[in-house]
Length: 113
Image (cartoon, rainbow, N blue to C red; front, side):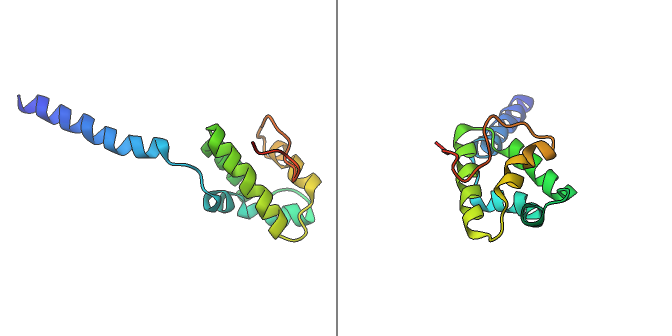
C-alpha cells in the first residue's frame, strides 16, 4: 500500500511540474536573449558567431507552437525596427547560415499571423 501511495505521489508531482512547462508561452525577452549574439552580424555581415547560431537554433526549438512562432516573428520585427543598422538581407539568410530550416521568409514585411 505504501508503494502505491508513493507512485501516486510521484505521478501527481510530475503532472504539476510538466503541465506548467508545456503551456508556458515564448516571450520577447526570451527571443531577445536568444538572438542578442546576432546583432553585430546583422549590422556588419561576415560570418555569424557561434553564439548567434546557437541562439537561432535554440529559438527554433523553443518556438514549436503557432502562437510561439507568431510571438517570435512579432518580437523580431519590433527588434529590427528599434535596433539601427540591421541589414534585411542578412536577417533573411540567417537561418540558413545557421543550419536552420524555417517555412517562411525572415522579413520586416512578413505577416506574422
